[in-house]
Structures are given as C-alpha cells and as structure tokens.
Figure 1 (spheres, rainbow, N blue to C red):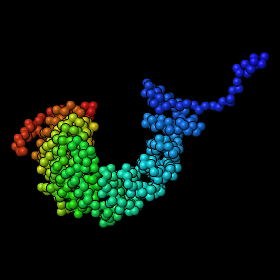
Figure 2: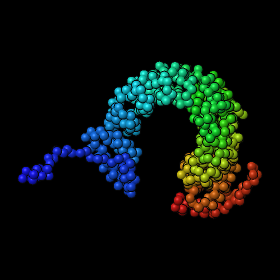
Figure 3: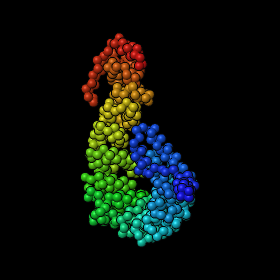
Figure 4: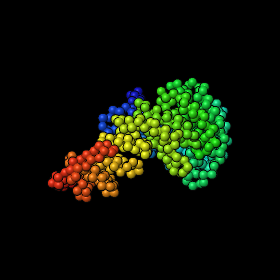
Length: 577
C-alpha cells in the first residue's frame, strides 16, 4: 500500500504556479521575409500592423531583452513609410544603456525616428554629455554624430563645451566628428562663433585628411550662417563679422593647400579616377568663393590658383568636371578680372559639347545665371558695360551656335534651358538670326509652351527690332505659327505696329495677312483676328498690286473686292471664330 501510495504521489507531482510569458515577437530578418513575401499592399499593411501591435505590447510590458530588436524593426518600418513615433522613448532607453551594441541601435533610432522638434529629445541631453566623456572613442563618436544631426539650440549651448574638448582630441577619428557636430551647434547658435574661431585656424593645419575636409566644411557653414544672419538684420555692407575677418587671413593658406593638391596630391588613396582628391578640392573652392565675394584683396590672392585649376584639370573624367564646375562658380562670384571670367565661360562652352545631358544642363543653367548677373552688374555700374570685348556676354556670343544646337536636342529640359539662355543672348547685332531660330523652335515645341515663347519673342522684337518692316514681318510669322496659343497682347501689338507704320508697310502687311488667312485652316485664331482687322482698316490697299525690292524682292497681285469679301465671309462662318 505504501509503495502504491508513493507511486501515486510520484505520478502527480506538485505543479509550480505559472505566469503569463511575454509574446514572442519576430526577429528582424523574419519580418523582412514576411514583408517581401506580401503580394499586395493590403497584405503588407496587415503584417506591419500585427508586428506594430506586438512591439507596443513589448514596450508596455517593459520587455528589456527585446528592446534593441524592436527598435531595429521600427527602423525597418520607418524605411517603408509606416508610423513609428511610439518607439521614440525606447530609443532614449537604449541610448542610456551601458552596452555598446544597444547604444548603437539607440543612437541610430534616435537619429532616424526623431526630429529636432520632438519633445523627448531633451531627455537625451544628459546621456549625450555622459557619452561625450566616455573613454570609448566609438561611444563618443556616436554621441557626436547624434549632435551633428539633431542638436537643438538649447542642446547646442549645453553641449558645445564638451564638443570643443574633442576638437582638441589626440585622435583624428574624434576631431573630424567633432567638427561636424560643432557645425550643427554653430548653425543653431551663431552667437557662439567668436568663441571657437581660433580653434578653426589650428584645425586647418591638421595633417589628417578627415579633419581637414570637415573643418573646411565647418568654416563654409559658419560663413553661410553669418551671411544669412547679416541679410536678415539688414546690416551695412561695411560691417565684417569676426569669423569672416579671421577666415580672410587664412586665404593664403587655403590657396597653398589647393595648389599642393594640384601639383602633388594629398594621398593616392583619396584620388578618384586619376583626379587628386576631388572632394577636398571642391570644398576648398566653395570656401574660397564665399571669402572672395565682394573682397578684391582676397579675390586677387586666389586668382592665380583658380586659373591653374581651370587649365590643368582633366575634363575626361566626371570628377574633373565637378571640380571645373565649382571653379567656374567661384570665378563668377569673386571680383575676378575679365580674362579669368572669359576662361570660365569657355569651360562652360566645352561643357555644352559633352555627351552627358546632366553636364550640358548644368552648363546652360550656369551660363544663363552668369549673363543675368553681368547685366545686373552693368545696370548697377553705369560706367561698366556688359558688351565689352572681354565681357562674359561677349565670350558667350562665341558659343552661340552651340547653344542654338541645343534647341534640337531630344531632351525637353535641355531645350528649355537653351531657350532661356538664347533670350539673354539676343542683342542688336544678332536679333535677326536668333529670332529666326526662336520661330523655328516655336514650330516644334509643345503647345503648352507656345504662349510663353510668343510673349518672349514679342519682348525681343520690341527691344531690338532693326526696322518696322522686320518687326511686322516677324509678328505675322509668329501669328501664322502660334496664332491659337498666343494671348491678346501679341495680337494687340501686331495691330498697333501695323497702324503706326507708313502706307507701304501697311500694304505689305495687309497683303501678307490676307494670303495667310486664305491658307489657314481656321485654327490660328490670333492670325484671323489681326487679318480681319487689317482688311477692315486697309482693305483698299489689297485691291492694288504691291511690290518692293528691299530688303528682298516681294510682290503681291491686286485682289478683286469680291474675293476679299468672300475670304472674310468664309472666316466668319467658321466655328473657331
């Protein structure tokens, strides 16, 4: 009995109390597989909604062992465009973790899932300060990256002294990250710039490539921010900030650095397609452009090296084209002499012959901007002329045929940029040839662009017309091509110019309009309006024959009154009229 009782007691052991186990969420790789396996958007939304619910439950139940996995999955959902705001506080908790893997995921989540407007971001200030003082350079690097991406004005003021300590670090890894973090801090708090100007001067002499390129970027951002603040405060041009004054003293050092890059290079590992360190060259050129603007002394110091960059850089490689483009931008922005500006225009002219449409588009855009700035400069300085033999406009006229050829390009964006540039190229000497090209393009261009082109041609005709006959002839041709699309202003201008002309031009215009009205199929409404008005006002002139020998032989036969009436009557019966 005892043994059987013992057996019974062994077969029914005491069961310990059970507690609800946390729901097991998917691993990141499993979630990615499930999302990729979805065949419809609805299936994908269902998978994300289910996993989001699991993550919310884990957050509510404080499941620490899955926190880093959940934040990683939230990053994936964020990439897909789904809301992930409920995981922001989890990022803060991971950032505060003492373990590097969790801290790394936390910082990544904080930089991607939060913006500088997020209220919870202030909770990270203390963790950032602690991590900046960490002996582990990778943890300090994470904190510096976060500051460079997210720091608010208040955080910048609190953390700038800690960032400054890393600017003096013995490790280049931390110095370069500190430069980018300080860039954010000074952008948010421009009034702190004066406290750190001397540090930039020291860093510019750093032997580390990463530190050098980041401090150049830092100086660039400081100048841009300073310029924006100056414009907002409407300060006088004579005022020069402390940062700009200090940076101007570094122009010789920057010029020497750029010249060394051209002659010997920084290090072969930073070369791209045989071009010596193009990223650093572009950064230095950008900084020189900001320093040389409206400063003759700085512009003179950098002119020689800019000419050296423009002549010695290889255009066969895309990296070389990037450097040349930045060089052109710098030359056109500083107080450069005419020969240097002509060199820049010739570089852009070579860009127009490039097979890459991106390079051609950039060249057309830059050329148009250069011409506009040159004309504005000529207006501001009455003694200066934008049509001198060595001016940008004159240099560009030599590339006129290349620009006109761009109107035949199959890419609509290239054609539009070329069209914009041609308007700026027109002057009294070339108005006839370029207007002919514009009328040819008017035949081929999309109809939705014709109204704007007609208005621009009208302005060209009004400004540069060599004589009344040419003006009237051009307006009639334009109405024949795009009479349906042109607006009332073009029709009114044609009528006004005809009415103000002498009888010879009136007879020529009326004869030509009647012929065009007969040939038209009724679609060019603007042409028919102008032609009908002219027949009503000067109909007696078409009853007589007309001929002229200048500028070329033209003759029209006199018409019978019944023929003219029949033509007008036919026009009035058309539905389009």
